[in-house]
Image 1 (spheres, rainbow, N blue to C red):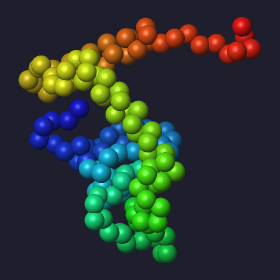
Image 2 (image 1 turned 120 degrees about the vertical axis):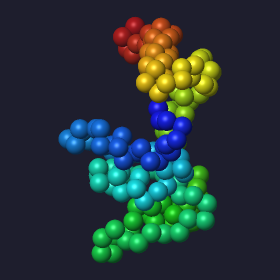
Image 3 (image 1 turned 120 degrees about the horizontal axis):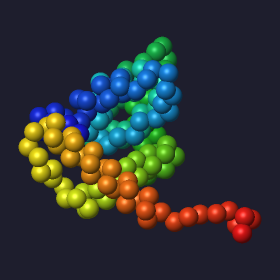
Length: 150
């Protein structure tokens, strides 16, 4: 949840800083709005793979180390060679759609706008909505058993 005056890409480095440094982070998937130097650097600093599609007309960035291409440049080369769909499938970028689906469900259940006006109460409202959705999801989940256990 961010204030209306703050862009999502601006807060990504701070969000990553909130994770304990010893907590492993394999990858960060985000849409093209996060295709900024600050976001890529924050992800690289954490030792994670950035799964961010470059914006239209993107050009390669300078190498990060001697002879080592910037990860964003590697993505651009892959997209140029094989197409965006191939890159999305091979990189695991499509897993991001699970988070998008969850947000769609949240907005479908509760509406796309928060009722409160102050940011602190909006945060509380958002947490309450998520908690309610999680309860509904748990209540609706089927019980699954391995075939050999029957």
